[in-house]
Image 1 (tube, protein in one colour):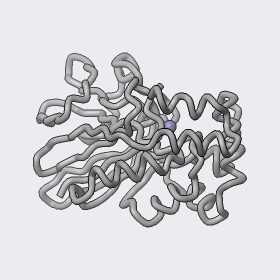
Image 2 (image 1 turned 90 degrees about the vertical axis):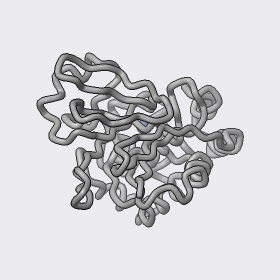
Image 3 (image 1 turned 90 degrees about the horizontal axis):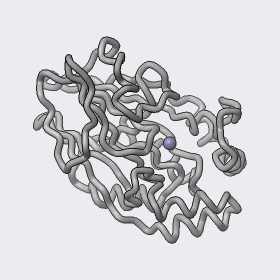
Length: 246
Ligand code: ZN
């Protein structure tokens, strides 16, 4: 049975619910690449969902910042404002759950017939590094010990194929067929704050049996998610960007 791969939900319960409804009946386990909270107005419902629903999850930089594990020095003003707000909104149980999330990469070992795969937030070498362009992955191949790593953090659906002679961007056509000779860094995109120009929630379905990754987009109630951000007194830009997917 395939797996549901989600990342960067960022407190957006409307986007998460639309994603789960779209994927319903198509997966056996859920894996999450971090940033459950920050930016969005529903951190508690998203963390509560993660506590009960995910099979494995790695922490993101916003999970650290919003649980108070990290200082906010590297955050821009609106990210900082939302982290401060999220810290005060989180229940102590949910804050503790975020504090204890493991750092990526995390190995998921499959059944005997399957090879394992890795979960990371940013780069497998540094959870805070953004893998944006092929040159960011130029020296990564020797450090990968699984053929398939899922990562997030950039909020851009797609990822990269690592061949012996170089790195190529993967365009998120509906279905990616994994082939033996390559290593794959696959980004399912962001559920709750896409930044690749498409405002629809992004996620992926990975089938170990078929050796495929299916990239999915699903519309959700952006108006409601944006209205809640404004109601909470969070920066306006965090609401506006959801309509544009930037
Ligand atoms: Zn993020």
